[in-house]
Each structure stands twice: as C-alpha cells, then as structure tokens.
Image 1 (tube, rainbow, N blue to C red):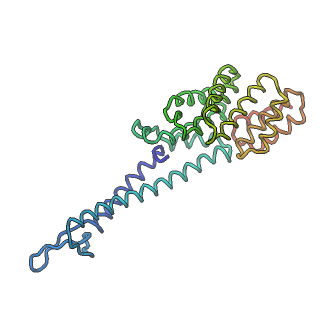
Image 2 (image 1 turned 135 degrees about the vertical axis):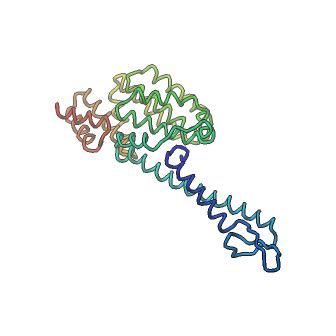
Image 3 (image 1 turned 90 degrees about the vertical axis):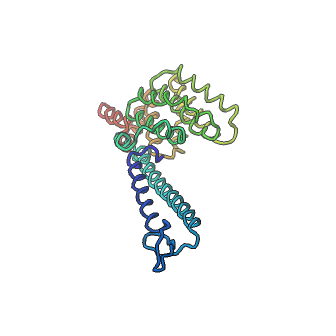
Length: 292
C-alpha cells in the first residue's frame, strides 16, 4: 500500500538520506595514515574500529547499508499499513464516506505503471474501497465506472487473489441492482457462478456469500420480498461492520415499505438514521422519517 500514499514518497527519501549519512559516518571504510606513514582502515569517519582487510570492510559496509535499507522499508510499510487501516475504518466502522473520500483525494496518489506492475493487489483493494465509498455516498455511476475500469487487470485471473475477484463482481452486482439494471447484474452473477465450478476451497465462503447477496438483491428487485426479507434478517445477525449493518437496515426498511409494514419500516429507518453518519442511505433515511 505504500506505493499509493503521497507522503510515503517523502518518507522514503528522508529514510534514504538518513541511511546514507549513518552508513558513511559509522560503517564506511576510511583510510588513515599513522605516524610511520602506514595506511590503516577504520570503520567510519570517527575511526572507532580498525579493519584488517579493506576488501572485507567494503563488503561489510555494503551489506550493512542494504540491511538498513530493508529495515527502513519495513518501518515505512508498517506506517502505511497503519494509516491504511485508519482510513478504511473511517468508511466501514465510522460510516463517514465523505471524510473517507476527502482523505482519499488528499493522501492517495495515482500509481505509476511501474508500481502497478509490482503492486496490483494493493491498488485493486484501494480502488474497491474507493468504489464502496462512492456508492454509499450516492455516486453509483462513478462507483460502477471505477470497478469497470479495473476489472480487466490480470490480478483478477490469479487464484491467490480470487478474494479480490469475488469482491469486485459482488460490488458490480450490488451497484447495478441499485440502478435497477437487472440484466447487467444477472450477467455478473453468471460470471461468479462460473468461478464456483473451479474454486472449491480457498475463499469459498466469500464466493458463496457474494452469490447469495447477489441472488437476493435480484429477488428484491423482482418483488420476491419475503425471500429477500428472510435473507436480510439473517445477514443482519452475522454482519461484522457498521457499514454492512447500516446497508442491511436500509434494505430492510425498503422491503417493509413495499410490504406496507410502516412500523418495521420506521424501526429500521431510525436505526439507520442514528448510526449511519454521512452514508447516503442514512441521509435519505432522515429525510424519509421527516415525511412519515
């Protein structure tokens, strides 16, 4: 993920300069002449440790410098992963899509082709979360565009990254259902089902969950409200994030409205309005409650 944070480039340059200075001061083999005119090598310009063999001294200096570089890269990775988790938590736990998007624009840079070649999974995960933020902010068309733009990346064809593949198609199905484009949603459901024929072990739970979500999203659009209602109730019980729970409350309120059950509709709208923060569906819930 460190390829995509703007400030990580500055940190990388700072670490590089610090490493270079420390390496030169403490580990670079420096020749000194003694009172007899003989040359002797010491580690560092402060000359605190003599070197018997200049060649091995230079080799040790190179190895130490490389090791320091690796340590700096690990530190940078830890910093960026922590920052990434903080940003994602804003979306999925705090349900503040607007803040997430503002931080996304401020912190994230578009990666170069070189960095994409070596870090596609990180970039894909970043863009999938970005599409979710757009979607819950009410920008459904832009969310679709983001996913359609990245779906041709080779990373989605690699079995070890099928979790990203299933998330991508699950997201596209959800977005097209939101736009009432059942035809396109069913097209991607068929794509997911083809994966079920070859992916039987790893990420199987994720695949099944996305397929179930997709099927019931379509059912709710096709007016099979009772089946969709049962599924969403079960999903609400096992939801793991505030974002997921709020989206389910939104779907349940819609179904109860179609069934004419205003009491339960209002119940879920109130929960959504109280806990949904700046999610688009929560804003709509508040507006709806004012009219009921």
